[in-house]
Every structure is written in structure tokens, then in C-alpha cells.
Length: 404
Image (cartoon, helix red, strand yellow):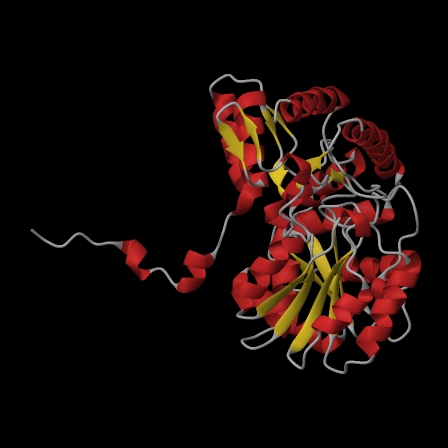
């Protein structure tokens, strides 16, 4: 008998280390249960539940009719890079040139472009937990070391600068900063960011990757772009995209802005992996930037009302701890009071087990905080209808009340 070929034995350590993550796992379980006819309310995915505004869709259709279906320049079409430079100057106080902006096939790719351009074996990257799941995966892919700094609900999920300073070593090259934050909705104040900027200025090899993709979903406080602080423009890679504020998740278009040597390196990375982003999508993004923002504001107001609904319901549950949510469409309550409890013969030791139990028994799908480096919390996306939110929150409250 010939030996059976086992392709899995050929997989690289990089492939074996790649983790689809808890968000994907919970979403898949939700789909499987719904396929069986079960009424599952899903608050897992960070995706606007609104359609892309009509003027953006119309621009994409026109671009298709005009023949913009060919390869785009790797770094993006010149018109869009110029428009983004103007947007960053006017809205964010950032003086990037068009040649310092690189369009990508989604902000995930922009993150990987940046990390692969800066980080290699032996380099350290500071991640401020809770953090978006893709940051750590990008560092692993580049062969770097992630240094995770924890914060909790009592600190509004923002790591104090003294703790950041203590973690910096000669090998530290990058700090991952996300404000407004996924998964917590936290927003760093200008004073807090100035403290971090002073720290960065004291370390000549240190840069900051500032992920600002939720800037248009701000309810309270001030949006401050880290690169706009004195001396920080050349030290900052500013990340953004069209998916959240413009409800363009499926269009897959993000961008990064950085000093020209870094921007050129990011474009080289992208040229190897995927080449340029879809051209007619870039034409639609140009319309998004230059068109009316009425729909963007309408969506923000809906998210604000949902934020108030979710905060009120969660704060009414005894044992749940949650900070204010000044931005985004996420709630990140601390549920540590419910760990170590039982539901009948079922012991709940971790937030992963808690989320699985809530899905199995109460048909509500949320994400364990372990996906974000915060083991005592869970994430709920309130990019969902008010009806679904009320149903889900009722089920969560009922489920938690059963734990003894």
C-alpha cells in the first residue's frame, strides 16, 4: 500500500500558529444554530447594520460604467491619495503628503503592511489591552514579540503611561494605540495622549501605530489624532478606513499614512501580497470623502441611542461592571463576578465558557474577552437593531441570574 500523503505535516509553524479567533468561532456557531432553525441573537461582529450610503453606491456603479475595472496603482489612485491628504489635514491636523498615504485591501492589510515594514525577529511591540485581536496576530506574523499591558474597567480600560514607560526596553520599536477603542469604546484624552507623546520623544527608536478607524462614531469627548501632537507626525503611522464610519465593510478599503520611507516600505509589502486595492471601490471612497455626511451623522445618532440602551440595561444587572462608552458600537462589561459559578451541574470558569453557555442555553451570541487580551470581560456589538438588542440584553440578564 502506498503511504498516505499528509499535507498537514508540511504546514509551517506560522500557519499552525494562526488562530481564527473567538469572534470567528462564535459567529460560526451562531450560523450553525440558525441553520437548525434556532432564534439566535448575534452581537458578535463589528459591522454596521446599515447599508452603504446611496451616493457612494452610485459612484461605484458609475466607475464601473466608465471602465474603472483595471489594476490600480499599488499605493492607490492619485486622486484618492490627494483627497485623503486633504481630509487628514482639515479634519485631523495631520500634514501628510499624498505620497505618504498607502491604500490597502482593508485596514487589516494596512496594519500588516505597517508591522511587516517595521518589525522583525527580536523587535518588541507594546499592545495596550484590551486590544483588537489583529494586532497581536500581525506581530506574530512578522516574527516580533508582543508585550501586552493590561488595564481594567476601573481605569476605563486605558493603560497608565507609567506602566507603558516601565515596559519599554531597547528592543521596543512600536506601540499599538487604538482610540476610539475596539473592544471597549474608550477614547484617550488629549492630556493622556500628550503624556504618551512625551514618552515616545524620549526614545529615539520608538514609533506609534495609531488606529483611528472609529473616529466618526464618537459620542462624547474630543477626537485627537496622535500624529497631530508636537513631534509625533514622523513617529506615527496613522491607520484608518471606510468600513465603520461609512458602513463600507464589504468594500475592503483601508489606508495608512506615514513618513515617506515607511510609506514606500508598506507599498512594497503590499505589492508582494496583493497589489493595489480595487479601483472602482477607490472611486466610491473618493465620493464618500467629498460627498455629504448626513448619513454618517444619522448612523452615529442611532449608535448613540443604542449605546444609552445597552449601558442602562447592563448597569441594571447586579454584578456587571462597565465603564462609560464615549465612542464606537461596542460594550465591554466586566463579568468576573459570574466566573466560578454554576448553572445546574455546569461550572462556568472562563468567559469563553460563559459565552458558549449563553449561546447554547439562551441563544445570544457575544464574544469572550480573551479574544482581546482581557479574560474577565465580554464584548457586545450594538451595531444591531433596537429590537435585537432588547431581546439579547433580556436573555443575558436572565442567563446571568441563573448562575449561583
